[in-house]
Length: 201
Image (tube, rainbow, N blue to C red; front, side, top):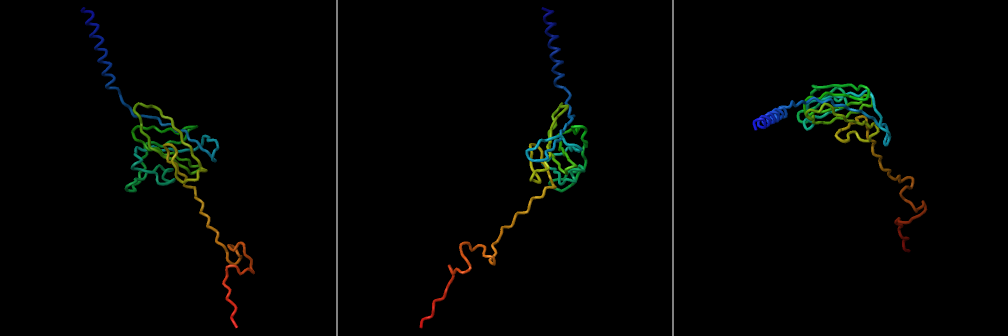
């Protein structure tokens, strides 16, 4: 009986220590954010890996901060949506190495800016950093052919400031001198015109 009790106490002690270990498990926010940048040069074309991409990470919420222009994106600058204040305190800046741009994120939420300097395109988004997640893999696709200056693609807000919308064509107005708009009549016809009556004798 005593041996049984000793064994029971030993099991309880092991369970208690394991429980303590679970309760006091170290929580870490340190995630390597791996971005694969692609480019699609024409509508319906194949997206291929692009080169020379630059990325920034800010500890910021996109409900309060935005990217105001291509120049700001390229230089790592955010703008306050309420006050217009500028900030350039990016916690990380990375240049593409081989196929990937990698940012180290150590707080949440994080605002990510990704820039294609060759085609002058950029995209940005906010992401939540999960606890004890060492790596996260995402992709972004730049589309220079897009007929929109700003558009949303998945979680990314994409920007193509180089796009210029075509001016609307002015409707053609008929020229009264060349007979346009008088179809079905010739120059000798008096149809539809007032002709005074002959005077009575």
